[in-house]
Length: 228
Image (cartoon, rainbow, N blue to C red):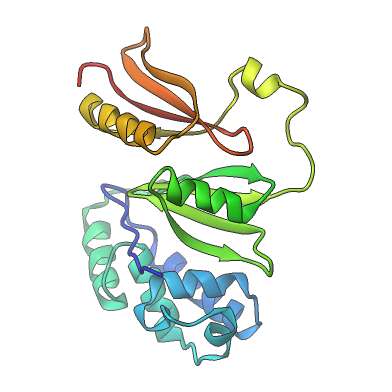
């Protein structure tokens, strides 16, 4: 499973004390046997990459590991680099506390079959599985570039009747930087045999969009500028 570092481009640096608390929280979760943290540790720290959940939880995990994990999630190679960056940012801040900034959002899709949902995203849409959790898996995440989608398996209908398609209720929206890239993605999906709820279309508000229908009826909007 690939490792990654999450960066927050142009986002204000979080308070260093809060980052310390976050590292201690990861450490506490590992010590307490809170298994969902295993996937986060494995995906962020390279030396845990090839371990399964049980092995991650049984391997020594120190405060320095938790701090490195927080640093990498903030876009830095290690804790010292993060502290240096935090100090540099705070020296530029004048007056009062900095406003808390949301660095990332993720859509959550409700699916009836986790394996089928992962296969759809990887086989049809070119995503990769970041992690799955549970035996059998009932929760997971897929990503393509900066686009991340969380998957949650449910056993009952989430929408009543055909309201989702009638009202075009979107489960997720993903944006590309240019109309050319959007068209290339559309052609890629078309070649993969994707089911389109809406084909490529110029919208009145200056965007170009298309909508993909997932195996559970989830509607996924892809959008970009109409002018290319």
